[in-house]
Amino acid sequence: MHESYHRRGFLPLAFLTLLIVILAGVIFLAYRFGKNNPSSSTVPTAPHAAQADTRNDTDAALVTKNRTTRFTRTYPTLIKGVHEPGNPFFADMIARSDEGVELLGVNTVSIPVDHQYQNGELVLISENPGLPATNEQYIAQIIRAKEKGFAVLLAVAVWGTQSAPFGLPQEKVLADVRKVALAWATIAEQYQAEYFVPASEFDWQLFREYTNHQTAEQDTIVQIYNTFHVEILPALKKIFSGKTIAQYALASPNTNVPGYDYLAPNMSPLGRNLEDWKTYCAQLMEFAAASAKSSGTQWFVGEFWVPHHDRQAGSGKAGTVLTTVDGQSYDELQDEFYAAAFEQYLNFSGELKPQGLIFTQYAVPYASIKGRPVETVIKDFFGSI
Image (cartoon, rainbow, N blue to C red; front, side, top):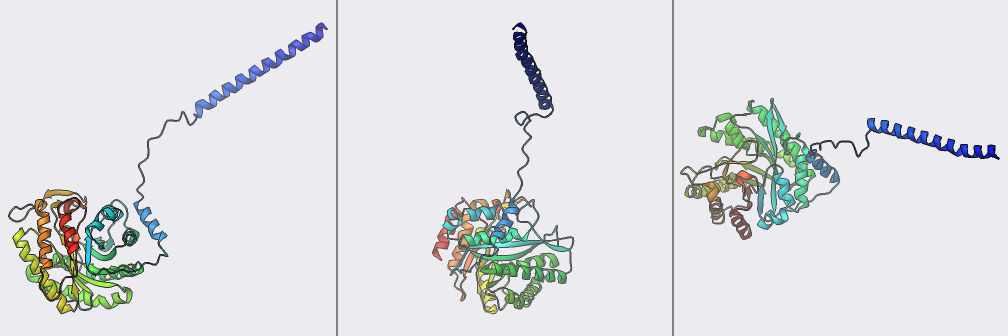
């Protein structure tokens, strides 16, 4: 009995000792493993990576989503438009249109497809600063505008400056612009843009590039502009079934482009004071009507622009306040310059009446009208025509 009792007492003790050893081993291994492989609760939090810029992806996804959408055209009786170039301004304007431009009476949006020369090649300019340029950036703008019920004016634009000229023979520039114009006419047709401009303000760019602003050469440039538009029109008509527009900037009664649905002069005070602007604006409208009559077409104001601050190149921000030749502030008198142009429009007594007007810009800082007194002026004007 004594031996049996001893064995019965030894076995539990031996088992307990073994259990303690195993437990100690587990704790040791866990400690070592944990020391070299910290748990998620002990891993230091990594700094947040910069948020990815998904604007191009968003545009591409919208285009893909609408790849098979059948868009239609809707033409307003009169064009009441806004020209808001570049993102994020355009996208924001469209997204909030029901509390913004729609309340002003806007029925049409102008979308410029911007190009410039780089290393001798005409290339697309990105609508999403900081990201590569893609066709989808511009197509997405068409889709967004269409989804909100706006008529779309799609305009091919080619930009150069005195500091960044084309630097190429005129024949090459004309051929390059023709090529991109027809390519974008195909896209305009696919997405049923109501209006198409093959070369917006092309006369001004030719004038700047090849005459260095020599007034004596202006008529020669106008004739080159006319010839370009007449020669491209048959090919354009085979591609695009909407309404075609010849949009120009030089003040001339000699623009002659038969076959286009509209002429669209761009207008701006360009440093003039208020009284001079009234006279000059009336003259520009007379020139437009004369050109429309000789072309056998109609006309509207393609862009009416009163920048009130200097533009800081590439920033989209407002610089110093702009003034007239005699020191009047465009910032303070913006609404009066708009009102003067609208008065000339309403009182125009020529045979061919204007068929609308597009103002520039809505929220882009250096020429914005958003939240300014001129908003009421625009709303009243659009409501009256």
